Every structure is written in structure tokens, then in C-alpha cells.
Length: 65
Image (cartoon, rainbow, N blue to C red; front, side, top):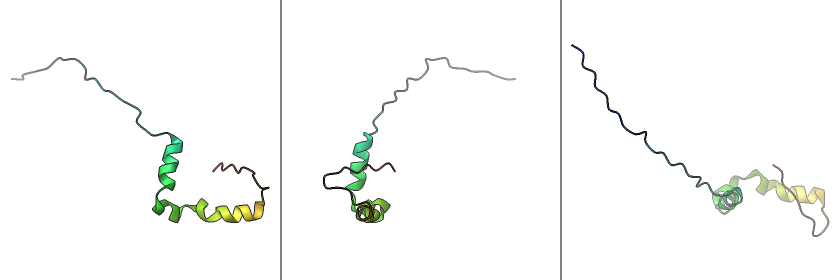
């Protein structure tokens, strides 16, 4: 003999919220950590780039990487 049992109820409510920090805040959090600064490739090459590029005083540098 087979017995079938079932329960009917409302679908569960799922709330999804976007709690991810802004990208600029994530970068700030990363760069504020000495552990990241020790291994960040940009930290070690930026001075060399500026030495070779010789931007004029007051120029802005845009990092697209």
C-alpha cells in the first residue's frame, strides 16, 4: 500500500539586498591594508612609470588597468 502525503503552503519570501560597497570604497579598503601594498604590482612599478613618462608638473595620470 502506498501513501501519498503533501503539504501546500505559500512560496517562501526571499529578500535580496545589494550590500556591496561602492567600487571606490573597495579600492580604498584594499590599499589601506599593508599586506596588499606589499604585493600590489602597481605599487612597485608606478615610480618607474613616472620616471620614464616624465609628466609635466600638475598633470593627472589615469590608470586604466
